[in-house]
Image 1: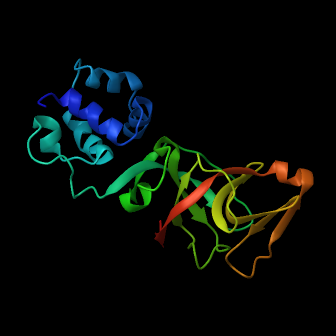
Image 2: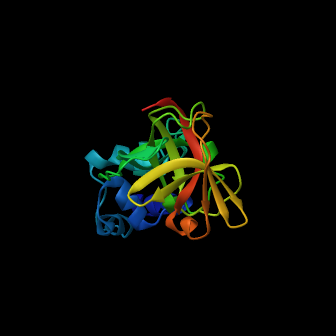
Image 3: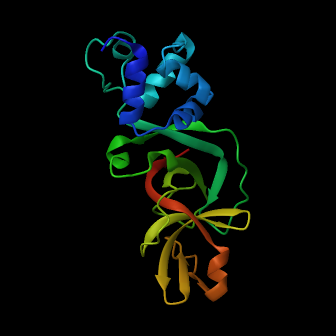
Length: 210
């Protein structure tokens, strides 16, 4: 295979990314990606490095088709990172959504996930999830995975607040728990449960603060 447009399309599909998702991660339009894959345009030199990171390939292979495609330098999967959105590991934090950046999540964690287009990262704020999460830890969330499994960690929305908590279901009850024993378990019943939206399952988190 010698054409760059074919290699871009091949790797995009291997990464389970739609054209729109790839465009979002590169801060480009879907039309730009479509034109690359149809051979109308080629990626500019200014965007080539970021494209290779997202597709996890080395530049020489993408440009020429020579040598191995995979780049050991990119042993991570780049996902949208909302650095301006603070997910409260406490009693709640007002969301402040900003433009998406990219954050590297280890591929060993990503490979077990489905619906990769629905994965993103937030910053945890507060100490209620200590010692699991530090204040400033980055959490990776799969927004396609909202089914509650007892004791697992999720990002939830309560009104304008985003929180990261451990969830457990009981008959007509939802228990919202912190890892820090100083924070009591919150119990929601009946219609109160309807006011809690599960954004997604936290399947990975950083061990250092951002």
